[in-house]
Amino acid sequence: MAITHRQKLHLMLAGAALLGVAGIGTPAQAQIRNVIDTLAADGRFDRFIEIVQRAGFTDQLRGVGPITLLAPTNTAFNTAPSGVISAMMEQGSGGVGGGSLSGGSPDQIRLRAFVQYFMVPAVMPVGEGTTRVRTLNGADIAVTRMGEVVTVVNPAPGQQVSGFSAAGINATAPATVVQTIPASNGVVAVIDRVIFP
Image (cartoon, rainbow, N blue to C red; front, side, top):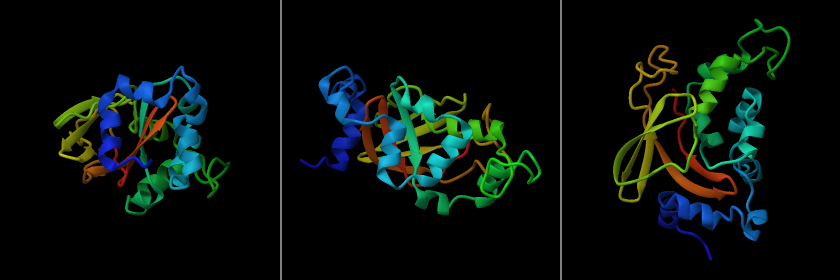
């Protein structure tokens, strides 16, 4: 039986009930992957997975949850400011040495802060209206639910503790949660835009 968009959003709302549905501690657990393996099996998240790997969070996303991982699709990265992403991936060694495909080492501090902005250390609450939620990098996201539409955005660009605030790059339009996927250690919330801390 296929799960509708509304039912998937209700899974996020359920919190503890979601954990029971996802099968944590039950035989069904073997049938559901952890959040990072869920992304890898999907095929829509190659660019985000590369960034997660370079930031060193792959093992953490395979570990104990619950965690909500906001996961921008490859298409979402096509509309993001590519210079900012490239700078994080290539900065650090002046183009010599190697962590990225272009030969530069990633800017680990910014890269880790960026990835942690997509990680909520709980099943993210999604009640009607707007709720501020603290991410693992210490900055907040604003989660807004109006009917069946859920969006996330940086609520205070330029004022975030762990924000980029470089030339207003973190002042972006809200990302829409287009799908939620249960995982053994939480939830993958698929988003259609890249957001910045």
